[in-house]
Amino acid sequence: MDASKDELKQAIEKEHGGKATHHHAVPVNEKERGQSIWHGIVHVFDLADHPKAKRAYAWSTPVEEGSAERRIVTMLQIAPVNGPIEAVRAALAAELQAKHGHQDVNRNAKTTGSPHRSGAPVGRGPASPSKQRGRGG
Image 1: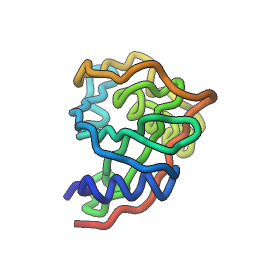
Image 2: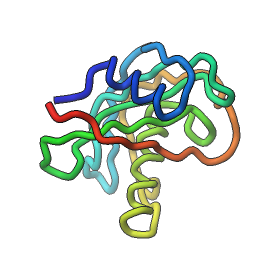
Image 3: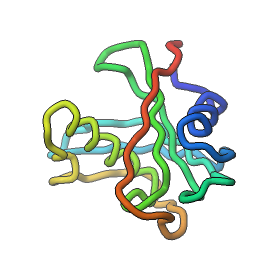
């Protein structure tokens, strides 16, 4: 079961600070070499009282393939992350880097999802995902 909007909001506020308000949700299907490598719903939150970001993205994903246990992934809208699709790509790249020492997710990647994106990126530097265990459900 996916995490609730409130669980995602709490995760953003705990990991990054500020006050998160749910804005909308976007379906994302990240593909590489024609194969879906991640699909799900990314929730977009407006973020108040944060020094670098005005938006944050959050979703839940299985702890490992086929697992019912889920974890929550949160990302701030800080360049190069300027929308939900880029947030998923950055999280996948960080996961690949941690597991295998490379970030191959953007090479030959095609993504489908909502073209709705927020305004210009806020902040500087690379974005890195914050992950925490979500409650299984």
